[in-house]
Length: 312
Image 1 (cartoon, helix red, strand yellow):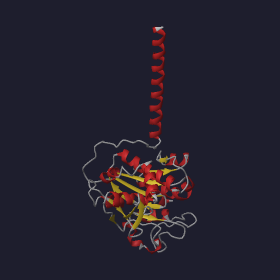
Image 2 (cartoon, helix red, strand yellow):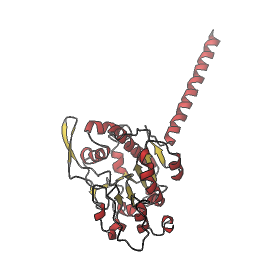
Image 3 (cartoon, helix red, strand yellow):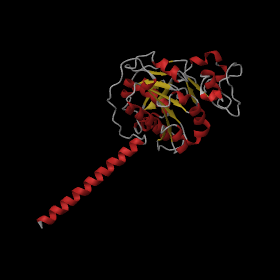
Image 4 (cartoon, helix red, strand yellow):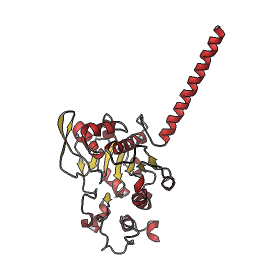
């Protein structure tokens, strides 16, 4: 009887161990896909010297339905200047995009609608993967942004990454919301123009930010995901935004931007009927509107005329 009981206990121990190992392997598999539900912050050391492109984690939020119309122009242009640093956060599998970007297309499994829970889940996943990278800066953009990586590096080098820094551009001067029964005022960096957040500040945002926590924050504060980042920073943490005129969204009339200043800009948006005006640009390859409706290809050749795209 004693021997039989011992064998039963041993068998149960083997089954438990097998299940534990299997569960751990599934968790590792999920993490490799870029979905971080319980991510530990990286503690690897960072270089104390001047910030380089390798010190920046660039995330771009998109949706499966925009892979062709919005991501194709990005992959053909500015992505080539920051391939190792840029990741696309989407809501559907795309083998072609994943191959083209060398594995930098992450299906967040958050859902494909424009509802707050789905968009907040995506943004929270961007945040989690940034923290896991251990890099000094998180610069995040939307899929309708052209980004100039060298200018982005120049921008963040104007500030001390060890301090609590968020660089962005306002869409309106001030917002207010009802949060836990109180009227709270806040400012936010418009997501359509992009923003850059230093690591110390990102770490302080953890109580309200992350794949699951940001969904809760947007629900309780009755706001969208980019508003929530500003709410966390300016209201909960009482940290002022650093404003810049080098980030541009479709909230502006982009055709009014002086072409002579385009070399200085960090980000430029695009939308049907609202793109940068390159009609008067000379000695640069300008693509037909049918081929280049976003004007990203023409802009890229204006800024980087030696790019392969501009030699055809």
